Image (cartoon, rainbow, N blue to C red; front, side, top):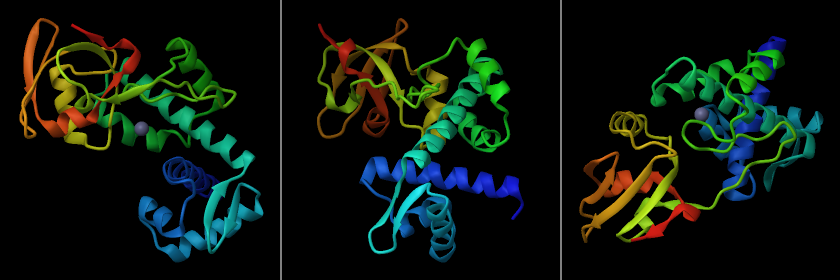
Length: 226
Ligand SMILES: [Zn+2]
């Protein structure tokens, strides 16, 4: 493996371990293999390497966690990824559903100067276009108290804080109708038994399904009962 491919691969491992660790406390070899779509055997080889570089704490029986240095590097990659997403969206007009894959490719190849330049152009954003926090240069992560729209009862007004970005088709739909982070919405009606959910925003009303509402997150501080 060439140096740049090796570092790209290391960055992807650190990112995945960070994500798994956040959700499950620690990452297992099989979970990492699943996320990266490669065999457990090659994951084991790489984990030994990362452990020798003191980027992870690796115990073959328990799983893996990031060291302080590993976490710093992971947060830097995530910062670059999310800033690139913001740039693709705001400056280049990308569709929401396209930015993630593009950022996954670009994040390994942009220079620090490029990142600083786009940070300046974008006025140092705190959140990416899907509303996920962008780690600061010092590795701090902006926090916000949010819950899925499905957990609220009508009638309330609130601001959308983030969108689950795992489903590309859903993102395209939300992009088309304009249900995006920052948008103020009114939850008008929630039908029983997983029925439609009626929303108002921008002087229009739409009904969305239960599954869609689960993917939309609301800034809890913005909630007002009407
Ligand atoms: Zn992304």
